[in-house]
Amino acid sequence: MEFEIVKFFNHLWAGTFVDQVTFVISKRSFLLILFFLILAAIYIFEKKDRKKIIAGLILSVIFYYIFSEFLFKYFITNFIPGRIRPYIAHPGEIFPIGSNMSNDSSFPSSHMVGAVAFFWSLIYHYRKLIIPGTIFVFIVAFARLHNGMHYPSDIIAGVIIGIFCGSLALFTINKIKI
Image (tube, rainbow, N blue to C red):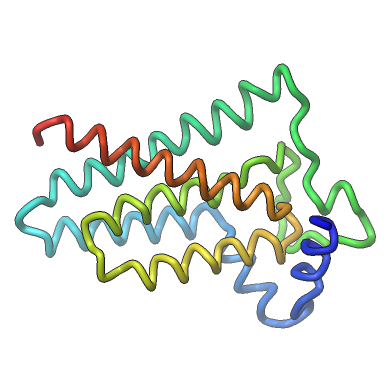
């Protein structure tokens, strides 16, 4: 079932401008630039709680790296084999979009963990961003499926871990008096 979902999204609008859009959205450099622009906007425009908000957002990214990149992608895969990405598991049926394809474990989606953790922390402080933040997270999820990098369960696990990381960052920052 998951294979069919990935195949559907991978073939949806394949060969169109959507390929380029999802490729750019999936680049870590794009996400980093977006996150730094948001941090800069908070630094410039937020007067009241800017240190606390920025510290929470940075901590959410740190927790993302600890849990997603280190714990799941590297530590656990020393004991349990990682999940093979769809484009590797189903060559000829799932086509990778972009260059420098990842061949590490597809579980969980690190892009989802990072995006959700960051936006979960951001939306806590700026409730008006819930709609654009949610739309952005859905676009990242679509991009990862369209590019053939993840199964739906990788995306769902990424969202759950991202919520955990964002919540842990908010809990930690609220315990620390900044």
